[in-house]
Length: 114
Length: 114
Image 1 (cartoon, rainbow over the protein chains, first blue to last red):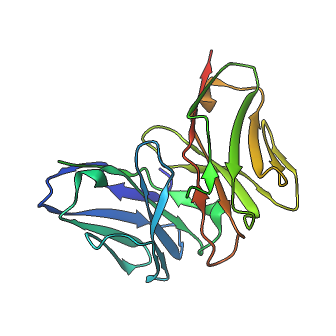
Image 2 (cartoon, rainbow over the protein chains, first blue to last red):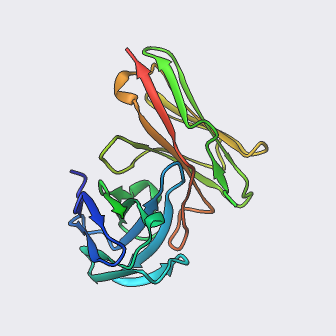
């Protein structure tokens, strides 16, 4: 375990479903991130939170809705997804934004939209 | 427009030999570069980094070389071990400070054969 825990590990959902991905860290980090990794593509930054405040929304469709209720938890709420949204969703944290060598990633949630 | 590219999706080497993973970038503003390693079912972990003021950084069996004029960096692993088999991601940033963002490559699957 890296200190960043993501649940569930796998998720299959229909296009009309609503589901949520959860990320939890107890490293005392102040920044948390959602990344998307599609097959054979680079990791794409989706959202950045610093001290529970969203500091970046990287042109992500509104069917993805992040929530950061406190510095230890980050959620990604999913609604009316498309099959092309199937991917590995990775959560990461760092002591503060921009300190990349201290990024700690979770193991990811493998999402399949059917 | 993909600013960080890893043109080899896979690389296979024999145990004990050198592994060379390559990465090219297009953004001349990048001045901090990192390599991450990812095992199946785990998140990426930081491996080694280099700042643009250097052309080489070494950490044990891992060495990263940076050629700024060619906008190219490479990761050398010597000697390669079967436990090095993983996906290696190259990443770049304009600077490692708060507010900066990482841009990742697509990854290279390294397989080290016993």
